[in-house]
Image (cartoon, rainbow, N blue to C red):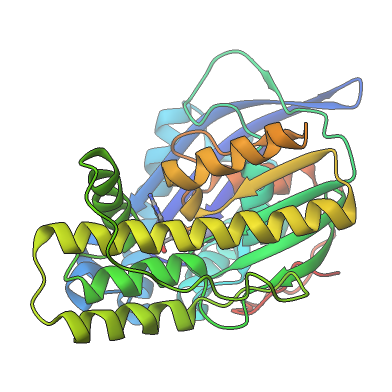
Length: 352
Ligand code: KG4
Ligand code: ZN
């Protein structure tokens, strides 16, 4: 079974060709082609993703990348059995480009087009052990339940209970900014380019490596609140006030702020996850979304899993950010392929 995955929810145009088979109830997969075309350089001058520009670029690049992915997979389009396309959440003008492209190919090849939730993609994406093209089949791990997923990206911060792949319940989420969004906004205040996560992370690491004295204190929002929700907007505002108070800042102060910000975010993420672990008693943790590329946050989650003796799945390099492999994999796992009218849904939820 060959699935074509298409992802255009934000500023990455991504296509993947994935071959799968079932052996004794376990899914085995072979990546035939996997392409991610980032638009970051175009959006950088706007300091964030500009939806209409993203749409234009996706429309331009989709047919080119489609040919490219078929070439790299060394197959013809007639060998594709189904198409998995991101329906939401994300930027609607961007989502529509992928959906319309998928429908066009689906109609031409007379194969089903399956709508995929981008956040489910991030969950399943963290279970994939390799993002490169390979010749041998690899196995998807057999997850033990109950399982909790912590999704941290540019648009989402969610704690999700998974009773099986496909059945999700959001236990807590951000009430305002997503964690990646907070990284990006704080980076902008510090005069750093988009996307801000990797930039802040670099500065924070410098502060730790150089033992720069800790002279700034930022809040840990909702640390002691009696629920599993998050809030990062106040933290961002605290950085703004700190910067106003300090006036002109030097490189060391910048690093100090980045470290304190990263510390605050990490503490809150870990503390809320701990709370969820204690109330839900999971055996497995899945961490997904672009922010888990952050080494400091990643280590903190690994330490937490060790503390509670939980199995933890983190995305391999190349799969924490947006990609079409995770979308193709969700599509491959879905056996119900009845065609439905697919509409982009910018706010699509994981709750079903
Ligand atoms: O999952 P993703 O690629 O796109 C969305 O679905 O939102 O996540 C992108 C987010 C951006 O906000 C980016 O700044 C953040 O992930 N990010 C990071 C790091 N790398 C990417 N945040 C913190 N540290 C990083 N190293
Ligand atoms: Zn994403």
